[in-house]
Amino acid sequence: MLGRAITLIESTVPAHEVLAQEVLQRLLPFTGRARRVGITGVPGVGKSTFIEALGCFLCGRGLRVAVLAIDPSSTLSRGSILGDKTRMERLSGEPNAFVRPSPSAGCAGGVARRTRETLWVCEAAGFDVVLVETVGVGQGETALRSLVDFFLLLLLPGAGDELQGIKRGIMELADAVLINKADGENRARAEFARSEQSTALHHLSSATPGWRTEVGLCSGRTGEGVLDAWATVERFYAQLGPAGVIAVRRREQMVRWLDDLVRDGLLARFQRDPAIRDLRPVLDRAVLDGEITVVQAAMRLLETFVTARPPEPRT
Image (tube, rainbow, N blue to C red; front, side, top):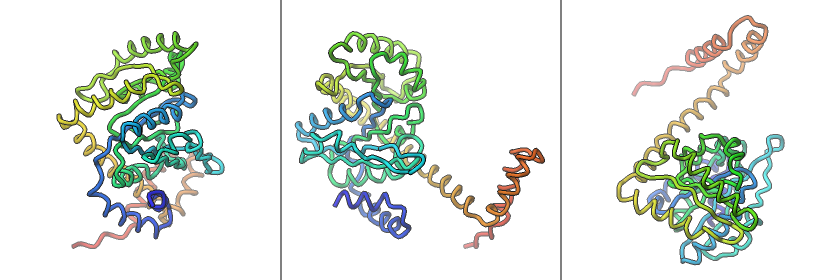
């Protein structure tokens, strides 16, 4: 039933979208009670392996765990492999766990179009922890910050190179940084990477007011560091929950989401407008021929969109 509800929410069929909103409206009073943890990192860092180890650990403690794994979609076919349940075979077999892969479908920010609503459904279904795994695209994965409470960044040993790949933007959003695959021959390099990243964090602003981001070591393969990682998450909620920081963050996220939906809706209406469709090719040619500037073309399109729309009826 949970899987079918999520499929309904992810559907782009207009009739399904109306029904999905009715479902979400009824579930809304039962949401907001789970730990919302986002996990990101560069491709190949071992997110799935770490999440499986963490999820099995939490299930062993009697918690119900939902994993929302966002799979990258092809830019050509728009298809996704959706293989995270295969990569988390042990966790998928846990009776208190639910693993749901979803396609990113070209959405920016490393999350899917309906990730937030899917998270709500999992909370209403009674899950204690919701882990959101993103596609691992690097600096662009900042949208995850806008729908979780705790933001965990995984890095590889030799993280000096990784830092160049993800830049400082994603580091400024992290509530914790873990050097994964810190086992075997990688141990020494992992220790060096932890020292290096700890130094880098000293030059960045705190991602969450009243919280100091720390760097730790872990191994999804051996399970080392998983207990410490979850202890950090629990400390985060124990320290910031009573202070109201998490509640404020969630309210700010809702307002930002409203702004995003309004912006996306306006853009969709703009692109569907008949007057814009007629004028756009003309202005494209004028810009390419050097007859007008891009700014002038944009202003012309916006003026046309506003004047072509009938005035709203007064109430």
